[in-house]
View 1: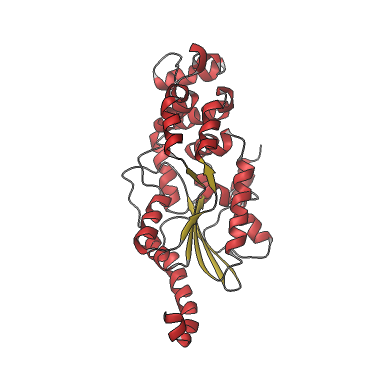
View 2: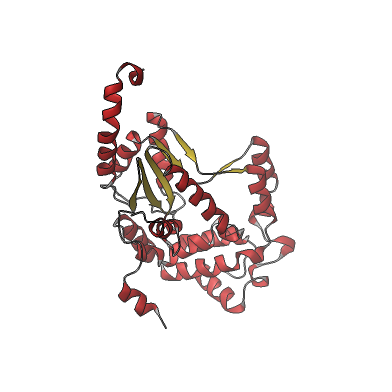
Length: 305
């Protein structure tokens, strides 16, 4: 191995390689922050879901940085067995329909039901809240067929055999059980946010994606579609958002305790929200180098009642 036959080269290469990776990463056309602690460098790439299918953004710098990193971290991953998939197919009606012949009008307030019916052009629906929220978010510009950042990076790690792992793993049977047994009432905040995103329209959704590409973080987080994506996420509906924060904070601390370069593909809101990962790192005396993630003082003043 080169490390044993050429120790002098092995000692000199990491410093140059790290700087090269960091410089490359700074050209990424997406929100990215660099954090250093000793000999550790962590590159946090803030991702969002539902990017438009035809959206064009430069990915070469991101792939190049991933290719030369020591390790890559992905979001929490659910792993299902064939038995889990079979159970989901068997219970498909439970996943897609409201229980006991009920409709959306049995769960939503009259005002929200009227808004939903105006948006969908239909009367009360028997579709599950999961299906209804997806339909509303699609009206707001959310694309389930878009190319996620994590998927793009995953292809690169496989092609170049870059060490990679998720920050956590969900057992498929546990995940499916929770989705199948969660009562419709737990989706009410999600439906409210999804209806607001649908009312804002596809153009507002496209602007969210453009703001993400241009690293306008406060504008992304303030987008109706981004708020809906957060409210309708598994973590929010299952009231496990604090668990997700804990998982990512642990993963970030571990990465900053290891030598070399780690590239982490993390949810943008989790990174940039008040008291999120970036705020915590800054409070600990570290310096996240990248775009401003907090609203300007003038914007904060304008938002106050």
